[in-house]
Amino acid sequence: MMSKDIQQKAHAGPELKQGKLLFASTMSFIVLVVLCGALFPDLLYKAGITTMKYLTDRFGWVYMAGSFIYVMVMFFFAFSKYGNIKLGPDDATPDFSTFSWMGMLFSAGMGTVMLYWGVAEPVYHYIHPLATTGLAPLSPEAAEFAMKQSFIHQGIQAWAAFSVVGLILGYMMYRKGETNLISNILIPWGRDKANGPLGKAINLICIFGAIAGISTSLGQTGLSLSVSFKYLFGTPDSDLVKIVVVATIAIITIFCTTAGLEKGIKVLSDYNVYLLVGILILVGLVGPTTKMFNVYFDTIGNYMNSFFSDALMLPTFAADKETSWITGWPIYYYAWAIAWAPFVGPFIARVSKGRTVREFILGSMILPCLGIFIWVAFFGTIGLESSPEVIKAAAASSKAATFIVLESLPFGKVISVGVVLALFTCFITSINSSTYTLSSMSSDGDPNPSNRMKIIWTIAQAAMALTLMLGVKNGIDLLQSISLIFALPLMFVLFLCIISTFKQFREEFK
Picture 1 (cartoon, rainbow, N blue to C red):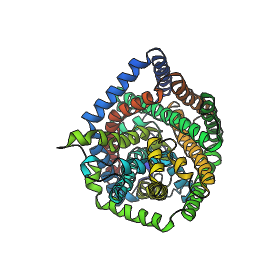
Picture 2 (picture 1 turned 45 degrees about the horizontal axis):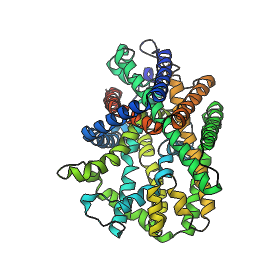
Picture 3 (picture 1 turned 90 degrees about the horizontal axis):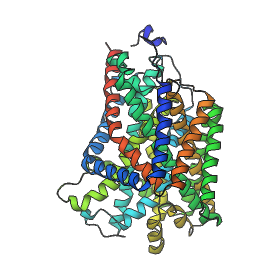
């Protein structure tokens, strides 16, 4: 299937050099956002939120349709003749065991979202179901709706965005011997295109979206952990605690990234999987075990049964009742996943060398979802089974929802501490992936960037998150709006990724 010249690490032209441009541009972007946030906070916040709301309201159909198309195309690649193509030479073998590979895929993707929203989202939908469903709040029907929506929002449409980027980059890196620059998706149209204005624009959009997305998540994680420490240990929810949390995450990230994939990130991801499984086993033992498993399989059935209608749900003839809910939940989730794709995609490509296209797609889209569904089913069930007072308190505070619900559960304190540790480790793996991507792109796509570059980017991400989290009112909301604004042009970058993948795969079979 594959000729020897393709297996050799040879280029049809000079390597692309954009590292200095990307590094300088992104650092300037960080400084500009922080300065504008400090000097004109209200103006910048209003502009960011207004733009984000306009885009999600006006182009919500683009986010929904695009996410659906990503899923369909990825499944086509997986089950077509292209599924046997390897991300590497035909005789390549995976660098990591399946267990470690799955741990890194899971932790780098939506692990923190699962921990943050595993209780908060089901209880919210339980109290506030979509108005046009006609469901009564706190009813059994509202509970089923709440669980299904939680599965949908953290399901394959979010993971498909990561896979679209990861697939083409893994193919280009390990099959074609190219670098890790996302602009390499333009090589099928000519190397001059990849290194020209369009290629540079693609890299800048991706790197700006990545830094805004991960800094937002770092800030949200700091806020959530600060609240959790208050519930668990009685510490004040103060700026000092938030600084300590973010600094600790940054220090551990520096240690993991400089230790390398095998010694640092792999070990942490393996530990994270063991921790999450241990928490689930404990919750399963002290909670309503049978009901949890019933909810898991029943909700998967509901999810699959109405996948097509839910995947393309948009406000139509009852837009006045549906728009705010749909833009605030499914469209928000899919836009968020697209904003994360530029740094999660290159990372999962990096750890997937030697896998087939089929393995890569099914491994990065389906298996992590099944793990997330177990978590949401278990924790969502104990949330919905709580007293009405606890449910209302949890729905009112998404940051503390998990800990509010666990207070009344046997071994609730132990489980809560485990969740806090898991939140740390999942997010550290996520920031590891963003640090790797930012460092690699700033080093002309080098798959093994220098430790110095990794340290610089870790500190830059932490500094941006802390500055806006503590020094600017609504700073995290501002960053969030910026990352979701970048999600719209990123959608078209992902469509270019798909077209490029088609062209490359067809060339394999000429």
